[in-house]
Image (cartoon, rainbow, N blue to C red):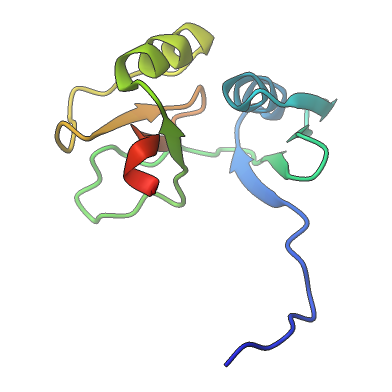
Length: 125
């Protein structure tokens, strides 16, 4: 059964320590633009999708791997080549933790420590 939604997702906002840095990283990683950035808030957008970043005093990155299994959130990025995407994102400020889940996914941490995954675009159909 399909129903018409009464709301549309306008943006996802993520807690962090440095909103300007996060907006710059994610805009570069996704090929978007930084549409707003100051000490307390940052936004990256492609014109139709938006990611917001809000500063939280005392914010701490989730552990990776986390023994409780929590990540707060994570993005799965579909890429054509895992190795070249990893190299590009590390050059933008991501880091690669030593703990990795296997050969078909690569876990990276954004500049504020949020885990995100790279996976082959072909796996998404």
